[in-house]
Image 1: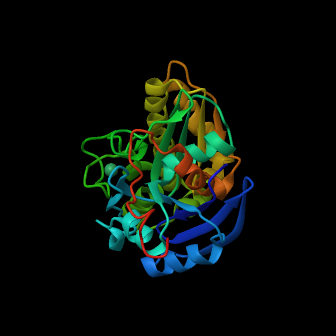
Image 2: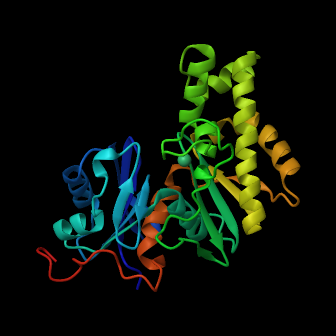
Length: 301
Ligand SMILES: [Zn+2]
């Protein structure tokens, strides 16, 4: 019998929770990301009466094996927290924690594209990735695999939130575009505004967008040379402008790759992370212990 799961998708600004039952997401709740108390209350509000597990897709660097959040530029107050232990002891349920982009790949594997070999890349405020090879998610040694956004493309390039210089994310993601517009135009624009001005024919925004598209394509070409995926699946807010950006990215991708795979946008939309989080308990690497130690004997279990 499939385990009942409460899925959590924790982003820098918003957290979403839902209960997965019968293959569908029920009792969804969305609220501003705040603290552990708020999260415990939200999980309690959507949880079923019987036993359940919790799967969390988290927007930030973490050690999946140890269940520890390492750092997250947008979620600093969660740093160094053993979230599975903390939540697990309060809820009396097993809690599984993984990076949000790898969870999105798992969501695609179980609910969306369902192929044996593909890469999922999200292009938004940051850039994240999740790889599926041979029908399994590649988690890496501690769950930090597929960090596409932190591939260094220009060693002398702009400073990234991670502390390195010239990461793909610092050049092409929303935060990087905001910084570039501030430097070159005197006012910081969102990626959406920058694209709108580029569309309207303004030269500097068009330059910035072209640079971002080429850098993004460079990142995709590295992924494609390493993995030979059947398809590159994309998600994230910036891909909402794919009608304008897609041809630029695809042209550069073909120039940078010997065998560029087709590029597609995710069809699961915002739910891709929730579906992945819901599948985490079942797809947890067999050789790893569940990261929470409170599934038995804890108060309330
Ligand atoms: Zn970086």
